Image 1 (cartoon, one colour):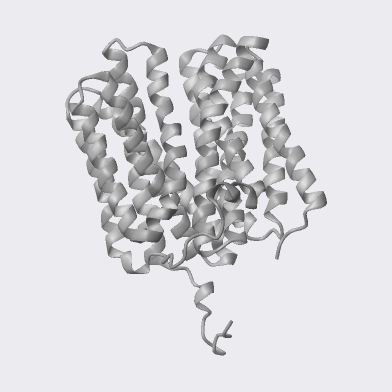
Image 2 (cartoon, helix red, strand yellow):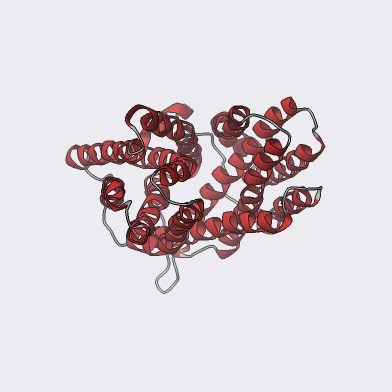
Length: 394
């Protein structure tokens, strides 16, 4: 490797702002559309008289679509380029988003879900790959913390837009599709700075799930706890005696923790020698929070304090896991591993609600906390073994 000229900045140590702005702003626009679309579609189906079971089955297509799209995304980016693949995904997701308004038969919503969430999955994979490439190693955690924060704000903005527009008429769909299409602008502007994949990944897609297992296991736990926790927490809280308003407030507190702590956690990850240690610490916080939850059910204020830090630590698994992934790989291997990372997240979003819901049915209301504690406990054991027997790679 050629040494940089004395007095000049090493390009690898510089933040590529046009690339970061393109990737972060584009995926945040998609976050707004998803934050608007998820409750919008569920409410419309509810108003049409579709059963909760079928609504849940239709919603589950998001995870299925992500699992289908993840292995295909890197191949498409290698063949057609990262920026063109992202722009095509933007158009495809915007068109399918409008399709929900015009598709009257319920069965049509299933392929539309697959297309919409498959396209947005490709955007997530390639945006995160682009961000990892454009971030200097010593600032990667900070940049990914900014990314996670802005994305969370995008989801929140989408939900706020839904609360204002409601579910009647074409306007919510137009706003969502427009937000998605706006994502193409920064991608097009920075298209010449997008990563170039001259070669395909060296290994089969499935092997990338296990090449940095601490990261992929972290995002699986994050997906399971996030999806299962968000979907089942209102049930858990109301059965424990909280009002719907208090349950909603507690969920908001978790979301605030998610937003507040991502940048600090990212900055900390830039200063630790082994990010696996930080991932273990956050999993321990998640485990402690789950175990303490039943104890503090009699005081929602104390519970909210626990949930504030708990929400931040849960989301930190994604931020630090992605940063750890980027520190271990590069080029086509990083793009393929990013796809595997999102694939594991999708598997978690499918598995989490099922396992947590079954635990509640089998053991009572506290099964919610015990199931989540099990997820975190298994991850702590896994990372403990990795730290003991697998030293950090250079």
